Structure formats: structure tokens, C-alpha cells
Length: 310
Image 1 (spheres, rainbow, N blue to C red):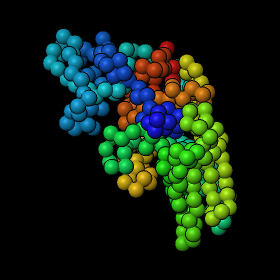
Image 2: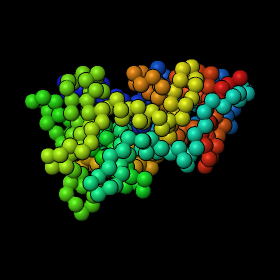
Image 3: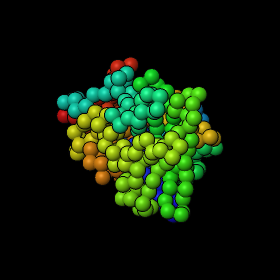
Image 4: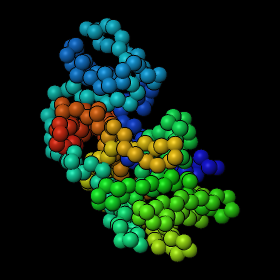
């Protein structure tokens, strides 16, 4: 019951880290472009694998075209660049690698402490387990995040602070005002199905006094407003964010990688969330299976663009 509860019902927070990974590995194999007829083209296609060092367990072997008869490997989920000579068409979305990075953390949903400090409220999913592995249940990876304009950040594991009837009683004490008494953060739920979780509320109290409440739906709405609109086969909101990890004490911190996250504009369509590793988006442009007819390219140090293929 615990696993179903947070792995499904809190899927709203999965977008900034690891939801449905884009790429041909989803079908269990690789669709090799017919245009890969030279070593130079193959090396451009295969450049992403160098960052992985030794081949991980999920790397699949495949045979190159007859001009390159030896075997190579690529990790599951890596994007396959479209090597066909298609012209780039209209740019449908552009995300600035500076101002749009981690923008989702600074929502207009704000909690103010008794000392006057303002914390923006957001949510995210971390990429690891508290013990550093990746084998724990999904319910342990969702976080509510509190961030000031100055970059001060606190977090609370959603399952740790969840409260539901007599089955679950959780909380986390956070000293938002350094040197002063801590505030208590809870997630109040009326049920354990997805709809009930979305209607649940975040509660922040000081002693017996409740100072702030916001529903999960309000948090989702606040997050959505921080995205960049992108109209592909359907309307999306695009987000750039550094990937988050968690410590053994269940606090969040930024990892060394970043992702582009494509979230359906319809907040009820959480199952369609796609996370793309920023390191896999090249200046030449790449295509992903979930976004047919469109490509992604990175202008190094400046922006990520999504554009139509003519």
C-alpha cells in the first residue's frame, strides 16, 4: 500500500528528475538511422557514451551497418540524433540556460516566517535513495522544497511528513529562522488514492498555531506557471533544472547534472512527463521518440531550443 500511495499518487513531483526517459531504449532496442554510414557520423552519434566510462549493465549491444561491421554499445534511453539532412524549421520553445535553470523553485506560492523571511514552495523528485543507492521504493524520492530568493533551501520528504488517519503520522521540524525555534511541516491527507493526495494539504505550524496551508493542487499550479510553453503534438510546459539528490538524513542537494523536463500542460496528464538529460542534447540537434517531428538542440552556454523538422 505504501508503494502504490507515493509511487502513483505523488507522480506530480516526478517531472524534474526521472520519469519516462526519452529515447529508443523504451522499446528494448535501438532504431539505428540508415544514414550512419561513416565512422565520423557514428562517433558524433555515440559521443554521449564517453561520459559513462565502463559500460553499465543496461547497455545493449547492436551491430553497425555493413560499412562498420564490429559491435558497439549504447546505454538504454540515450537519444538518437536524426542524421537525415532535414532542415530545421520553426523554433517552438527556447529555454535560457541561465535564467530558466531551476526557475521552478521560485514559485509565487510563498510562506513567510514569523521573522519575515519568505520561502517559495515547490516540489521535486530526487534521483537516489537516502542510502545512496537507487533500489528503494519510489515513495521515498518525493520532496517538498522551500527556497528563498537568496538561494537558502530546505526540504521535507513527502512520505516522511505524510499524515493519514491512524495509519500514518509524520512531520519534520525545520528551523527556517536560523537560531530560532523550529517550525513543524506536515502533509495532511484524507485518503491514499491519487485524487485524495492531490487534494491533500501542506501545513506549516509554529507550536500549536498553523501559519500556512496549501493544497497539493495549488503547488502543482504554482510549478506549472514557472515553465516555458511549448506546443508540439500537444501543449507542454518545459523546465530546466539541476538534478536533485538526497542525503541519508533525507535533505536535498544539487547534483552535478541537469535535465530538461517536458510536462503536459494538462496537470491531470502526469503520466506523460518526459525527462531528458541535458548532456545528451547536442548543438547538432537530437530527436526523441516521444516527440516525433521535433528536435532539440543546445546553443552551448546559452540556451536549449525545441524546433520543428521540415
